[in-house]
Length: 338
Ligand code: SF4
Image 1 (spheres, rainbow, N blue to C red):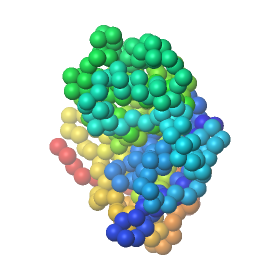
Image 2 (image 1 turned 45 degrees about the vertical axis):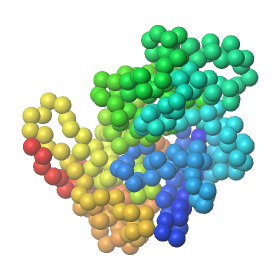
Image 3 (image 1 turned 90 degrees about the vertical axis):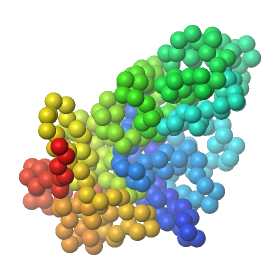
């Protein structure tokens, strides 16, 4: 197992008091596997990634275990963390412009990572920088090393970020909405690049996205998060064909389908509640058209449907309820878009 999160809880200080941002988050990532984390903004996807990277505010309270190749990241010293970041563990963000230094050339920025994490000599580093630029599919690599981020397109900048992330052959690459800022064609090229790099390097990838189209394209398994909790996880095919949690169903119904002239897009009414205003019981209850009294009183348990598929919803506890969800006879409230 490459990565294993067990009962990870995160509390952050907001307005002089601690609020729960992540609640008992547990999942695994295997070597060579791409795991998608999906959900709307404010569901805890990025905070899960930052907890794995330990890039949290100083006063954050992080509990539970985060094992990367059997070592618990939550116990790492600052020095051990610096060593592991960029080495075993790398992350790329949505907007490469804010992550790249505008004052340094592309070559210098990639070389810095190599200098920090490898014993390569200066000439070996220069050679490796050119190789990395070629590996991420950038043309005229020898010239590109002397150029600055502002001289490049958005897609090229994201490729540079991937080159920096790949510089030390990480075991795990975390991508936080890596294609959201790019146009559709470039988005497809970047996803294809990530797929081929994963195969070449046998690394694990966590793909954080609100876009289920991206999930369908690159992920092997999917974790659905809502209000800081994992509400469903399954293999990608199973999740799309047989979603069990009403929130997952709502997300899937929101995807526009090709070839439909008048599209009916399902949308989930309301918004994700703020962490300090979470309802008791099921956190989705205020937006769920299936909600029952029990839902508002008690948190639903995680029900294991198969070895790979689990979901947390009271409907799954009752046989009648399960048929209810599976048949889809009652849909989540939908809004018509023409
Ligand atoms: Fe809806 Fe109840 Fe299931 Fe929560 S537990 S998702 S409120 S049916």
